[in-house]
Length: 169
Image 1 (tube, rainbow, N blue to C red):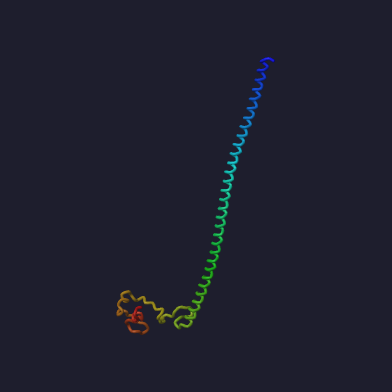
Image 2 (cartoon, rainbow, N blue to C red):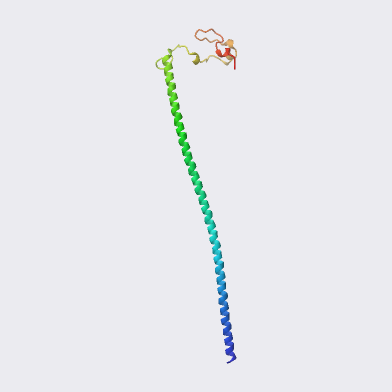
């Protein structure tokens, strides 16, 4: 055999060895790239899971707030109904008191000889002591009892006000 054949055989072996080495390094590189890609995907998936968990927690918080708001609204409705019922009860009580007051006034007017059938007072009728209106009195007459000159159904002029004769407590 000739040296050229030996050279070609050695070249062939070197080429085959280089191809095997290249295939092996290529495979290792692909495996490293796949592992790197898988790790990146794992990290990205973990990040997406964390975001999903945060979103889930936020959704639960929103649901809790919504339930709280609904509960508050229902409680406000109950309170409003209670207040409405209380207002109706007080209105009813006020109407009852007003009715009683009107009955008492009607009874008093029926007993009073100075009140006419239509509820007005007869002209010239004497005013009851508890219903007297002293429009003629001035603040100066309050300070000086001697200046009180009114007359009540024949009473003498002078200090006739019972409050002036009683000591203050």
